[in-house]
Structure formats: C-alpha cells, structure tokens
Picture (cartoon, rainbow, N blue to C red):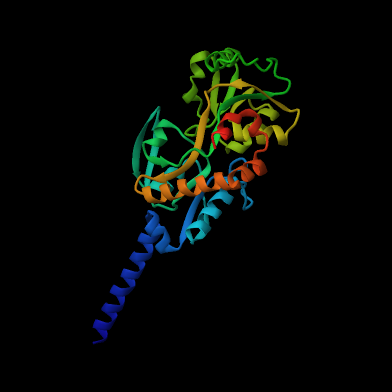
Length: 296
C-alpha cells in the first residue's frame, strides 16, 4: 500500500511540475494570457522605450494594456540576440531579408515592446502590431568630424547616396542582427569600413564620442536621446535608410492577442494616451515626422 501511495505521489508531483514547465516554456494567445492572469513583456533596455529603471514608453503602454485585459504585468528583460527566441520558441539568425531557424528554445514572454523595427526578416517569424513609432537610420558623427550634415534635397534616395559618399574610407559602427546591422544598408559596398559594436545599442554614441570609430549608425529614437544627453558632442550627418516604422512583436500563433493590442492602441490614440506618452518620452520626434502623427 505504501508503495502505491508513493508511486501515486510521484505521478502527481511529476504532473504538477510538467504543468508548471509547460506554462513557463510556452507562450499563449489571448485566452491563455487571461487564464494565466499575467502578460509577460519582453523588453530590451533601449532608448526611452525601456529605460531599465522600470519606466519607458513601451513599459507604460504594456502596463496599460495589461490593465485593459484585466491581468497582471510582468517585465522580462532580454537581449536583441535572444528576444525573438524568447517570444517564439525558435532561435533564429537573419540571412539578409530571410531567416534561418537554428533550433528550439523556451518561450519566456508574450509581447516584444522596446522600439522593435519592422524588418522583412523579422516579419517571417513574428507578427507585428500596427506601427507604434516612426524611425529611420541616421549616420552620427562627433561634432568635430570634417564632413557637414547634408542638406536635404527632398529626394530620400539622393540624400542617402550623399551620406554614403561621405563614408568612403571611414569607420562606422553598427550592431549585427539588429536594425543597425551595417550589412542591411550596403555600407561596405560604398567603401566604408563597418564593424559590429560588441556593447549594447545605448553605448554606440558614447563610443563615437570617445573616438572608438569615426561614425556610427543610430535609429531615430536613440539618436534623439543621444543628442539630448550629449549636446554639442555629436551631429547627425544624414539618413542611410528610408523612413521605417516600429511595432510590437507577437508570436505567429498569438493572433487574438495581437488583434486585442491593436484595438487597445487605437483607443489610446483616440483618447490622447498615446500622444501623451510620445510627448513625455520623445517630444522632439513630432518635429521630424509630423506626417506619422497626423495619421493618428
């Protein structure tokens, strides 16, 4: 009898552990999130989207979304290298506009929200929300860099070509496997000397200020933060990409959760919540991309 009780106890314990493991290792669509009672926000500390101090534009939006759903909010810090795997359960590597699946990993979150640029290779493994923020990739240099900022021509392709011409023979820092990967913008092909920065994205501008490279590429949100943080020490030379957009990322299997977020975001735009958060964290962006916010 004791043997039977011990066997039954072991089976029950194993079942409980398996349930806990499955609940933590796999993501879920809207019904699963509501049943769990928690939405897990995958965030990479970056610019003013996720500051790393418990706030940021993306943090506040997902906290409000959690309240809207009637569930608790949980922040799960991740990295650019791991964030897609943490959402989808698949470790991936970009190959130009395509993507290679390298294997399976545990799922740790339900939504990516940290200034997540919409890129073709990412769209193959992640579903995006409606766009949440405008962006573009700019060339940044120290204030004493010999080239002047280009004069906008009104033609983005001409402006990009003018910036790339300045880069011939110049060192430029980017970050592999992110929206700041130099290979995405053909910098090597125009004679630049690109390299991938080993630190995090927030450290790119300071690296240029210190002289680790002559230039770097930054997207608009981080560039605006850098210009505010180090006034007079860096300058924007011009664009190396057309205008891009950012959004929140959802697993391909989480269509209901993505749609619920889109409805929530639309409500935030109508009641002024979205505009208030943009003004709080990125007041200068309205000057650069008024047409994006006029659409809202």
